[in-house]
Length: 95
Image (cartoon, rainbow, N blue to C red; front, side, top):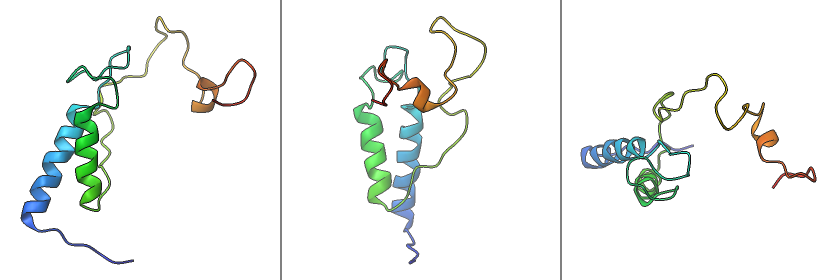
């Protein structure tokens, strides 16, 4: 595996893209970005993600950055135990 070193301009661009991506993480219950109001994935998150990938990096994960909190029940009902349980049709196979 090779290592890629980025110059200061690219590092600044990477930091700006990461900050922009984090601004567009929160999504309203209707599927719209809480920052710009576009349906997810919004153009802001796609653009920032594209910049990060173009520079040969992956977005950093920061737990809690989206502002989503898991807690007690909500009006949507209980939280499924897994992603697969949440995405099953009535017939059984995953969508």
